[in-house]
Amino acid sequence: MTDLRRALRSLIFLIVCPLLSACGGSSELNVPPAAPTATPPPSAHAQFVTDDQGRALILHGINVTGSAKDDPQRLPWVTRGDAERVQRDFGFNVVRFLIFWDAIEPSPGQYNETYLDQVAERIDWFAGVGVYVILDMHQDVYGHFDQNGKPLGFDGAPSWAARTDGLAHRIADPWSLTYIQPGVKRAFDNFWNADGPNADVQQHYVAAWAHVAARFKNHPWVLGYNLMNEPFAGSEFAGDFAGIFVGDVQRSKTFEQTLFHQFYERAVAAIRAIDADGWIFYEPLAFPSNNGGASYLGKLDDPRHGENRLVYFPHFYAILPELTLHYDPAKTLELDAWVEARTAEVAEIRTPVMIGEFGLPWTAGGSPLGYLRKILDTADQMTSGWAYWTYDPGNWAPIMGNDLHETPNADVLVRAYPQRVAGTPIRYAYDVDARTLDLTFVERDGVSGPTQLYIPARRFYAGGWHLEVDDTAGSWSSQWDGEREVLSVTTPHTGRLHRLRVVPAS
Ligand code: IDC
Image 1 (cartoon, rainbow, N blue to C red):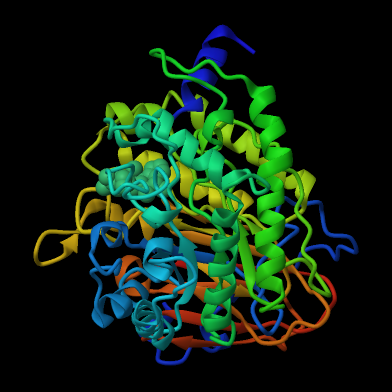
Image 2 (cartoon, rainbow, N blue to C red):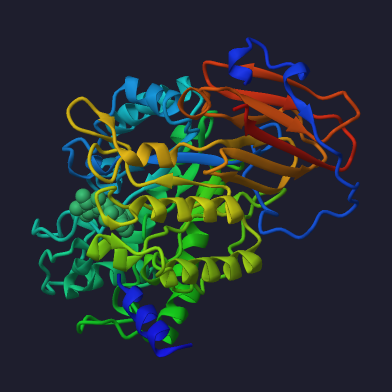
């Protein structure tokens, strides 16, 4: 590793069919068939989240919303109209919906059903337009207040569960530096140390999850549960602030493999006792993984019968562009380190992976849109999808202003993609310049229903588009839903690879 790379690693520790009413075979072109392949090539895409018909789900969406952190009721600002808009205008099929422990359990063992009712009402808005919801138990710097009511961090735990043992803490700038305040670290330590005098804290958190799971387990559009946003190692955090972070990786590694791993296993077991089928999302320690550092958490067990339904849910941020608000496309060290680290981890854990957060203001210098595209291309190559940060009007978002007009980020976040694949995707990719979507997949036993492609026809294909299919057997068919802009393609059961391609008609 070069010195520069090491220094950076240390730093990053911290921180045409639409014109025709029906999209029948006549509008498609056949391309030469691929050679039959008995064994699909190895792929980082081997594992996928699946729908109730066994189809691989590729999820594109957005976080809803950062603003909920400071809302007295901990609710996002969005309306039913926004739920409709994320599907109609942006083609999203998922939202990562922020929920908060302090709203769920304001006093120990007392759950706020009114809050959960309000969350349920909003989930139904998204469900009504066919958008899945991942419930994200959000925290940033542990919680708003410590046990004495003194400001501690930004959101998350109720004050009764924020045991700082009288250690000092104050809000720092940028906000994420607040994590290294002694009182904040202690609150996390008291959370992780599940056998100590504060064992009740984690027990309550896990029980609160079981309560939430009981409430939502039968909801067909609640895809699953994200156990904790951006977990932080407390005093085991590998680093300290001295202008630059110098990491003690071994300490952090030990923590991840013991207390942190055990916490996840407890939370998974508690949810599984209630809900055998919901997908359980989990994040690596945010620092250093957000910015390209490795995670040593290792594989988690899912006690359910059948295939694991755990989803690795890291965030993808690069510190330099975020702090300097400038992205130089020639400097991709941090982004490359992230890909390297996540690829190695996914190869070990064999779990679906999805990016829970990423983002940058479109007003940043250099090439902010290039930054987003690079992450989106990466996501196509190695994940089941992503959720952008965040649906709060402003420079980060695809919308801004009182009239909620689109920002330049919108045209980048909207991409053609396969939403449901009737088998296992081997490869999918959207070429922004050519406006071409490629999908290769292999059939899988037990899967029913068509493959569904989202094609942003109104936005990007004014001249129409063509579907190219490499199945010459002739038994494939397709149907275009112009309102949702979703193309359903039924491919013949040939037992081999299928290739679909969407290209602009002009
Ligand atoms: C940010 C919000 C910002 C707020 C801050 C602290 O955008 O307005 O002041 O949180 O509450 C994350 C976190 C996510 C952050 C986001 C952007 O998960 O909550 O939101 N971010 O900074 N990790 C890395 C970046």
